[in-house]
Length: 350
Image (cartoon, rainbow, N blue to C red; front, top):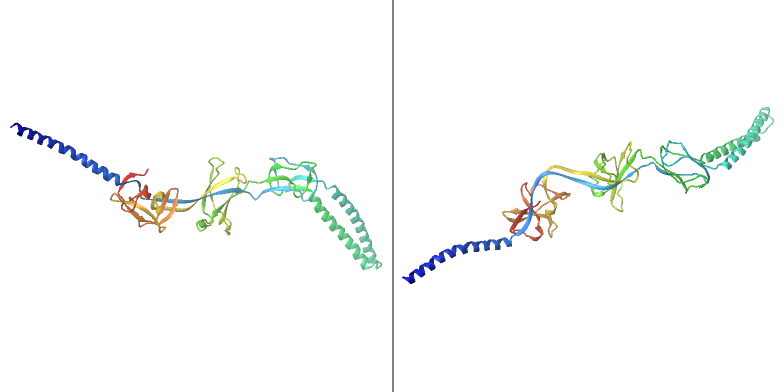
């Protein structure tokens, strides 16, 4: 009886031990299966709007930005403007010594008076039939020659006065009274920024997308948060061979804030889709045949799917319709460490 009691006690203990071991074994199996699954992050395929923009660096320019120099050499006798002064077209900027020209002009004037007197006498003699035709023509030629010389000298005298070719602001004065003037020595810098051009060079691959009238947003990185919504006014008809770009230009009239050579950043929307298949661009991989592909989550496993990328912009990619559907999940992080049919341990991409 004592022996039977001991056997019964052992059987009862074993009954309690076996159930306790079973969950531990199941848990171990689950951990083994979990360790073989690839940890990835996924994102949903969206049916949403997509916009692509061309971003290039531009420059502010003006056609009325000149260094004024003297057309003739000589001593500068006066500088009549100062920096910051607004001048009108034709305003005298500076004068160059023209005393020698004035002396020559007076000499020619005296010669012309005598030549005209001689012409008058020859005409009187000709009327009486006394003077010869040759002498009369010679007198006329002398008068005309002196008049031409005086006109030429008058033009040279005009070049001794430097005038503003357009209305603008004196940005800088280089010359001083008593300095020698010459073609290579600037007198002042005259700028008119009332009307400026914003120009940029764009890669030739965008030539079909950029036309006259294309809208663009212009910002100025060194000038606060100022932005302008403008339109392309001119598209170049020449591709620069050194960098394969073409030139665009737009004009800002009644300008009060922009200065020539100011840096501009131009953003042009060259593609806008109201509704399309959009996925994170980092989900796209390239295989050995140079095909773009993604891994789609299919019943907890990865499925390789070749896609056709229409355009990429700011971390998003527009995919051709027909391959992916809204709501599908694509692997975003961890895709490079898996293959087709890999079991996945999924975390949602943020």
